[in-house]
Length: 532
Image 1 (spheres, one colour):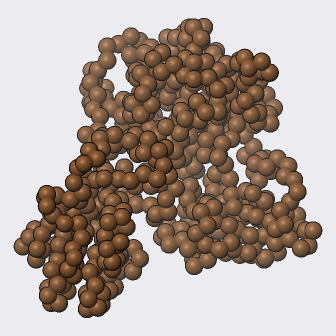
Image 2 (tube, one colour):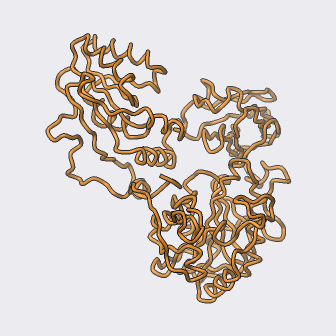
Image 3 (spheres, helix red, strand yellow):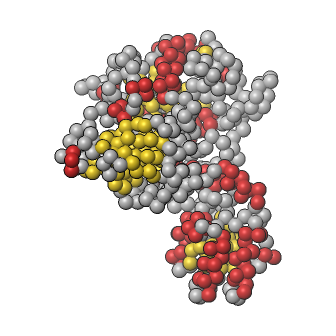
């Protein structure tokens, strides 16, 4: 069968046709027509593949400058790795995921995840880990919950999440959840970030005593920690796992640990780690939200919240608890009994949504689309909702859609606008258009053709745009990533449109989202970013 086999690289989002990887030939792919990747961070020669249909394997080598990943773990430049049927590769870490598929498919797969890793990268140890068990094994035949019989590491979603279940951990309706760095441990070196694997110490002697007492009172102790350094290549999964095992041993209490390895749904303050705990890692028990809690040091406290204390780097732990409806404590409040201090939360509240009967546009009486020919010029941050507004309300009325992301340059946008207006069509220009210079190009075209021009300001803040972009990323919508530099560039250039620029009217488009799924609406109404 192997002589007749073929190997294909298939995009998990099916954005292009599967790519054939011929037997024993180097195939170089990256930012190219075959993958339809246009992201400039992805090299045209990002990855080199060599398929072996006899052994049903593929050699993978990163040749581009930015990190790629195999099965969710970062690759190293010019170091070959071996992949098999069903393994995944990301052209950029966390993005542009593809899967290797042999046809016909192999009848069986042995060690499906670990086989694609070199021996030094296999994270399980004989002492602490073994073949992963199903979370349902937390219940016996009678349905009673039982303790974990041995300590195991589990890999979720190709390494995007790592879950450690310590021997003796039991499902419970009462959850005592903690951040790790800055909450349970600090560095020995005094640096913000650890300088070596064992650069950590338990912060206060009260910590193990408190955790042991909670365990005796029937709480399950859980760690939720963001460790994006794994996906960014600054540390390894193995180093973090060994560190967590040592920390738990020092605390002398059984617990679970959830490790978010990148900027995914599992990264706090997004709810992914909590959701999967409830769904798969608590023996099917409902959690008592009134007695459960979360403790973390990223609490949004201002400078000098205590004498000579620096401000918190973010409010992400407090936002995580707020998203979930959990009681929240800082480490000082929880372990030392200190009185709660001041905290600064974002002005932006994602749960604040417009009323159902709120108008789509202001001022009242303004029309969304015109029955006569017009040029409608949109203004707004990247991710503010301009394309959604076009798709839902403008394009169904027959407007020609002009967009720089599609056409490539403002010159082509101006030319396409002129052609459409000359053909008698109404036109909507779906660009950011932050300043008069970027807008006047289109206004002049309309003016010369005696076509009226309106301006529509979409979105209310940079915080909303940042939130929208993160939301789109988390639900898997295909958009090129929008960097903070691009957002700040728009902010610095922005000058509010004025009627003197040549508009017959300037309208404000109010935020009225539509959600395809209930879970999308739930997620959107949560804080998704460390900082706003």
